[in-house]
Length: 294
Image (cartoon, rainbow, N blue to C red):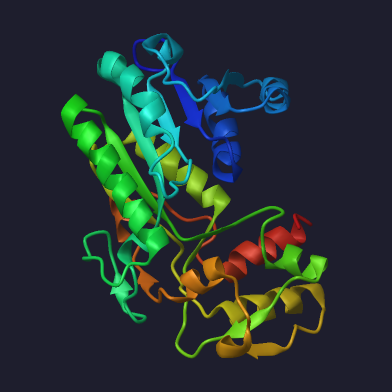
């Protein structure tokens, strides 16, 4: 509820892993929740969870579609044609801009490119960006241009590798799909989905239009170390180490390994007052193991 007592409304444009963990926090605070979908089956699932479905048909939404909505979380990934949400929302936002209190765009840390293991913060200039990272840069810029034109309170959340219940190295080991790939000097940053949810909620409580935030834990780590630790928790022998050159990775997986950097997360702590529930992968994986969330 806001200070004046009216119900707040959140539109999730794309209802995936992150949105599903944010939604219960907002519902508990009295938010009215709406989420886009493209099938009748997904609409029924959303309704069963107490979320109003907004069925997309490829046509731009009208201002009426945003009635009662003053928060929007954008999580649809861009493709070769650009951001999928912007052309569908632009007309509606143009007519409803004044009612918006907060918009969040879920981006990735791929916007920074490769920094050969060096530390990166939100103001670090990008370099050596791959195609996927460039699409994210373009999407951020497109939303930024619209936000500037309409005075929208846009916020950018650059996510590290996301893990959580059912989506973690414990689950990969259980399925038999985990691999220990070693590339000397390579590190990745990660973020537990529960921490993503609390960071987004903190930003809604302390909006700072135009701001970008790194969403990551305190410890970038070699990917093979994470698999090894998960195997120790499960009492399993970890899979053999595979040299990066012999790993036969998909083009998408190769693009992840093309970027090597350590992410700073000072801004979420200093500006949003966030205290991470899972400041490193060991804390996160141990909690998931103990909860049998894999």
